[in-house]
Length: 169
Length: 172
Image (cartoon, rainbow over all chains, first blue to last red; front, side):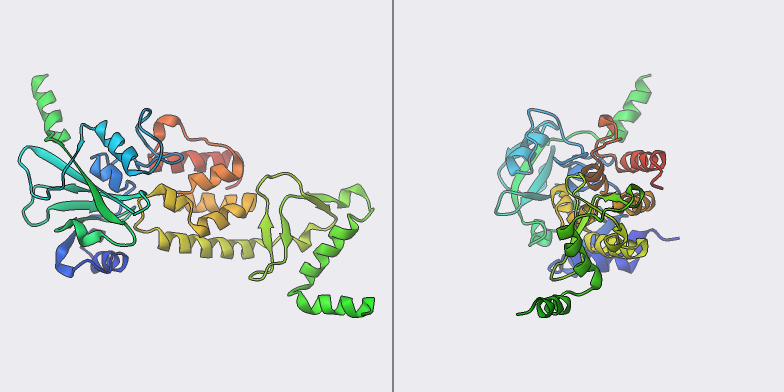
């Protein structure tokens, strides 16, 4: 049985939610799951991140609001630091981007991946993960605009760390 | 204008006999009958322009005692239909939304919360089927939170805790 992401409905769903995304600018990379774009950017697919009732959010001193400053503070706990906008792939660095409205309300986050064609990955609410070519592919009334980029020295994937740990035992 | 004519005008402006019935009882207070026939009703219904009734029960304190709550309480089937329509609207509008602030403040979600305790069985059954964001509505309605702090953001654990709570309290 094919997974949901391979069904044509997945692409139709994405294009219905984001009418301005060009057909050749995205690919559906995973099925719907119970985490959001913030968790996806933080590389934590177990918990829904948001400063709201019952959701995961780093504790104080990170402000419990959905402003850009609060999200920067939240990701500083993951070693990210604000940086100038540079959408090129920089060897040795992980990059993420915060999307917000003109009222400073955060709506979305995207993470850069080391793929020359599909440079960015986004989790669309509780829906699908997609790979997309440009940051502005998903800009619009739903997610606002990309307003802040953050980067950190590249982290080794968790799976690699676990493998190393097992080897050292 | 005679009192009789005024009364007939009032009848023609109201959509149902129930709506007419309620303000009259409000004015006159409960009938002085045996205590066993009186039941305390938490939600009150008032006529509105768009619907037959609007529910108000935000504080969960008894607002009015009426002798016959049947005139106020919607049938289960009607409530379920309303809940499903509102839930579908909420799911459709928040299908690609990551912001819990936006999910919790959606108009349909607020209206489900406004159904109060009557909505709990429907919410819990929906929660049992899909791990959606019903915990905030349940917390608003009940004032309880059975989810452990260390399970924050884990949607499967949140749903499990609430369904268990619903079984313990015999809502489902």
